[in-house]
Image (tube, rainbow, N blue to C red):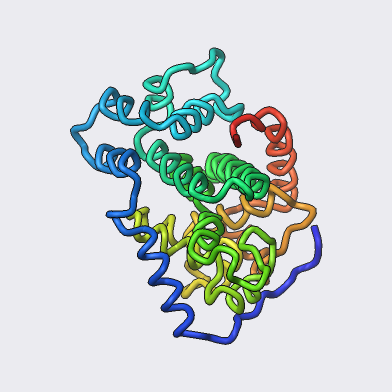
Length: 286
């Protein structure tokens, strides 16, 4: 791994941040949510909904249907036979994971086609982080694997959201660039992590998921670092192991590892495991 790098806070600019948050809120207003996604959200919130109800809605959106089925067939799940129907995929994944896939797919597909390469790379990273989070959750036993997967899947959702609300107006700087948190705050008014947490709040994701999204780069900034929620530590570490050679470590990295009873050798092993998935799951990113 590379040496520890401290990311300092950027100067506050409340007016720009408030304006950006207003634009994110407008984008995520219920009235602007596509009909299929809105219905999926309603059904997954309904304890009386059944698989066939959800299947009928998902069938109306090819992109969501493909993402749900392909994710259920990901190498990580290790099923001996291929899952080919939406209903089977829903049973494998569960309503919460289907909801998360529907939301992320809709957001990613709202970006203009000219950014397809960047979007595919970001989706690949998000999916790999979700897989890594599930591996770490299983290893530590501190978080349910499904919750870890969803938090990993959403951890960078602020990047496509930023692009959608800022477009090309930000002085040639793209939210897809791996620029520092400080530089994002200077250019956009807030980092992709903070924007992602706003988005998660609007879509009523769990508080743990929102917190993991917000602090996945800088868990040391959490209000009570000595009481860091396990999901935050797991998503921070999962994000690292997907690209361990270029990892930017928190100043509290060693303490975070200790809090979930993991070692640097564990991270290296997780990274090797994720590397094996990168080729076999490439088709799931499209």
